View 1 (cartoon, rainbow, N blue to C red):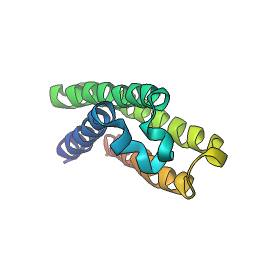
View 2: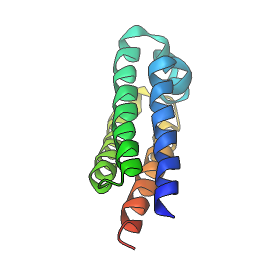
View 3: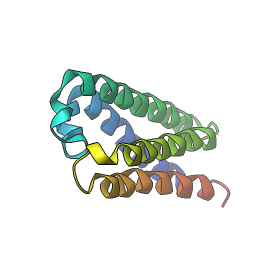
View 4: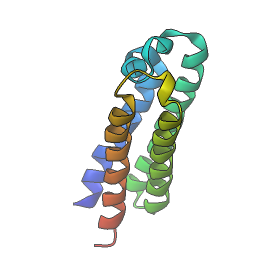
Length: 122
């Protein structure tokens, strides 16, 4: 039961990362406000999207091949927590409510990864 769920979650994370690379303004406009349309912001957003896509594609490959998944999930959680921290630090320059939205999205993603990691032991 864990493997199909892991594959679904990881596939969504790959798609999200690809979306950030392909359409950074569209994906991050609500998060970063008007700055999301500028080149200097789109550069790191695309990098973040590439991290998301590559990390989760590797995790997806591990899940499909039956290799250990936990290290990939731990890395995913670390990335999510970094996103929350970076957003909280930049709070004064971001649109209102962004920290809460980031906490919900990245925090929810971290919790999903933690739940998958815990289920690997079950």
